[in-house]
Image (cartoon, rainbow, N blue to C red; front, top):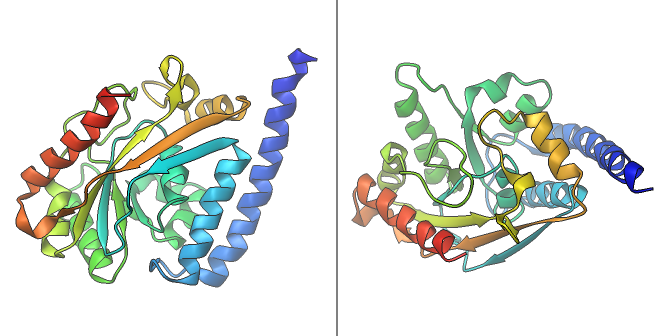
Length: 249
């Protein structure tokens, strides 16, 4: 019986995931127009979509702290691709993603329709273009989430935060709010959540699907008025707040 438990679990969750994605296509056509305003119908649908994804994967989310309600650049440490639905189930936001995702079948179109901001890493002027897109989104009343480490980690530390894109929050006179992401486990960080090294997306997805349940905890830390600080100061202050939580886990 135990031998068949994981394949059956994965098959059922995969079926639910396919149905969920098919529903998403219709919702994206009807309600998404590349900008998610926090008080809009599209925002409520986006929150529902990510919350439903967490349920399909049996990922139980807990959170603490007050979420900034004005236009905010949220910045978080990065552990897993599942950071995106975990955060998206709490805040109606625009994510910043690598441009390669935009070319993925179905997923790329859905992400673009839902207002994902794509960055062409390594191309000339990529950072300036991303900075402008973040600025425009904040000025139009939206929220943006950024993973300033630029890569995923094993969740036990926080790499240096790249500061360049923080300038968009300064120019838009927006808030910057750090978020500490954790996947609690008896070993410190849940191994199924890790998306590092040579781990492939499908491999990681199957690892999470095979778990009976996994937890993710979001700590919303003190929001910072970006207009009062330089981008380097904002990056360092945000990182230190997150690091303090991670080191005390």
